[in-house]
Length: 514
Image (cartoon, rainbow, N blue to C red; front, side, top):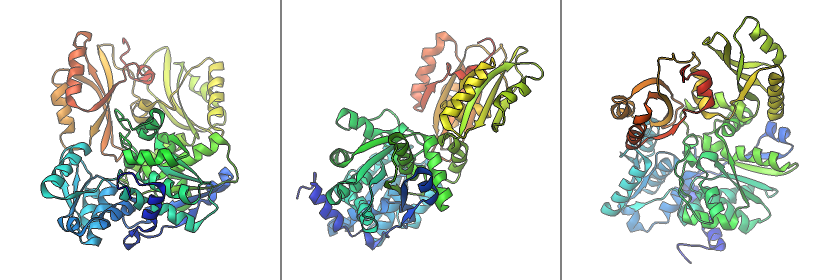
């Protein structure tokens, strides 16, 4: 049997013979009653959050380590991970009596480091990013003779994850669709290859986060490509490049791929909670977000659909972000910037135009004698169509309206900063958004490289429980110094975007003379 490129039949054999149940459990397939009624389909949730490590990753890690020769097991294994793979390797090593060394970035939250230690792993903190941690894991593998256990791009790991679909068909043979999240592709490859060997009529749809759609990029070009950046909200699928073997398997066995926004993921987390009282991590709810979107786009009824809840390891503070954005993701809230005259009675007139609709947020600060810029959120019952009607009614009443429902800067920052425009004395202000690593000294490092040369005129930071914080920062930079400033930004090494022309900044915060 080929070690590098197993056939579908060989993967089937690997999955059927996998010993994962030495440590993993058969997870329930639970019907989501409320969601099934709402979407006129039978919607089932595969509860991988109920594994001992609260994630499916245990399956692939254990299958890989269990297949190693005794000599390799005696020397030990090494892995690089700040998430679920780390815990899966740690517990698998403990169960098999294999020393497991897990290299984790220094920015890894204590809760994840403690979990690895609790499951018996040797946690090694190294570097400031996953790439640096992975390089250290490879060094340890080479110098100490440890076997490197990859998180997804390995036939034994793929086969371990594929045991999920083996359970699915034991639990329900009437399934018509299975939706599975995609990061590096190990879970999706394992699920798809088994289903297509045993029950090929089942449609298998891969679901990616919009900000880390490495499979979609590979799907369109025909081979794996490396993304420039990935979104970090759904950190469990934040992978820049799909695996070579996982892509080969997915290309042969996957029916379709769909992407979802962070807001749609938040809505799916709420759906799962409403039906089960379980709290999924963002990557864990991604499959359900994709299912809802797929049903709406294809107008599907009377199908029997499965979404895999892949994990529930999240930072509790992430729920603050989820609660703020789930209504937008469900298209039950619209966010608008509206310009009204600055005079008595106009706010009342504006509210009368809205009628009996509920205003869920209203931000305003006096800044001009002639006009007022207001930031307003409105509850919706009929999604995008209703929002468009509201915008039309406001415009018909003479108001300038800007739809900010999809404006990331508005939702992440501006809504918390409404306080009036900067005075005209603030010259040459430029606005940038950054992703700061959540580690000690990150802000100081930024100010040392940038703030000593250029004045910081505005700063907003909001922690959402992720390993990276979202920062909005304005600096006073003369046109002649712009090249020098951007040189400093590149040296800093943080991901950044120029938001100076973002309309919500212009409406609410930019200096009056700018």
